[in-house]
Length: 262
Image (cartoon, rainbow, N blue to C red; front, side):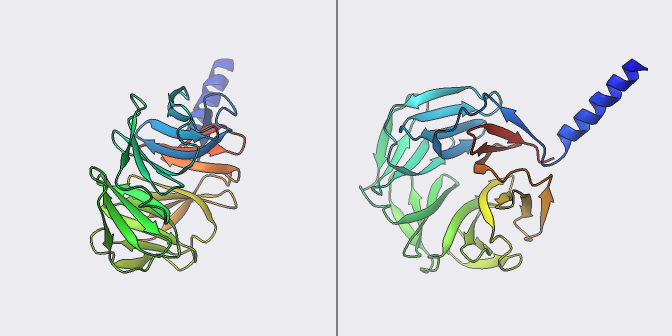
């Protein structure tokens, strides 16, 4: 009887872990308490510490290594590409860092991205929104940039890429799909549905967002339909990233968590 009880308990535990929205801590508790900028590509999470150091964390094990010392104190935005990490500094200058060597190089003209309020990578190019409301695409091999569409994005809070398109979340809480070639846009879902969003990331063309209530939602970007995953356990989330299969959060405690969505 004891054996059957243990097996039943293990099965119940495994089922619980497999539930969408379930989570587990990765790495030592509080190890990321000084993190202030985060980006992820595949299984590697790139983090800038308040000291200005750049780190790479293995999302599966929680182990990390320092990439570069005190070069990123003034980093405003960080983006992870397939082989390079890109940063925009408070000065508006754009840099590319090789995470294998820690070497970095400036891209384009100094200060060219000074007005950036949001950005994302799509098909190897950087798309940024300026405080003027203009949407730009940058060729990361040259730093050359071009405005896309009209100056209509001054109220954009966040921008993501999926389905070979751009998606913006506005101050109104409404979500829009934007053509990466023309800047033409259309609203997705109901107006204001994402007004309480405090963190978000795209994984496998689905948008995952965390609300101020701590609830985690999955949104189909083609339809705007959304559903809650798990319990509202994420009220302390500060940062949210994704690999190809899992979501990851860093909490106010500085701990890193892996979240199951299947």
